[in-house]
Amino acid sequence: MNEIDFQNPEQTIFYQIEKAIKQYRTMAQNNLNELGYSITINQILMLIQIEKRPEISQVELSELLFKDVASITRMTELLVKRDFLLRAENKDDRRKKI
Image 1 (cartoon, helix red, strand yellow):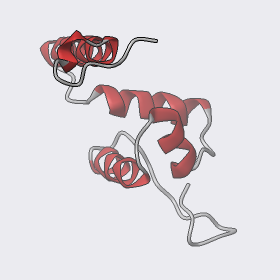
Image 2 (cartoon, one colour):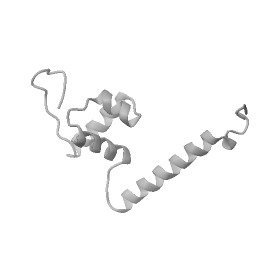
Image 3 (cartoon, one colour):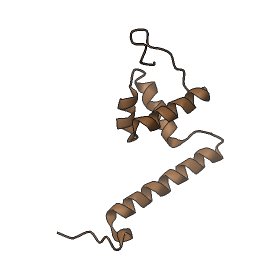
Image 4 (cartoon, helix red, strand yellow):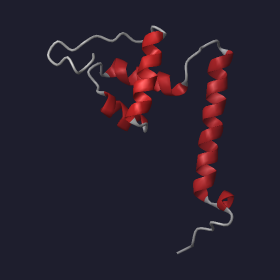
């Protein structure tokens, strides 16, 4: 089995995958910006999931989007402030939001 060369991480497949993902996300975000959309890819992905499953929890969103719950909370706050999302209190459990 080949060992990972920690002295030259750029030679590993993991580095190349991360680099490709970063370049793709940068390109996609630039395309959105050029089209005049002031929203991030992560925010769009979150809105798509909420549209598909309006009852989805923040924990479920964090798992689906590979984000921590605090990041999902921040994204939610931003999207509510910018009128992309509406938030209401859950009538059955006031600790939860809809």
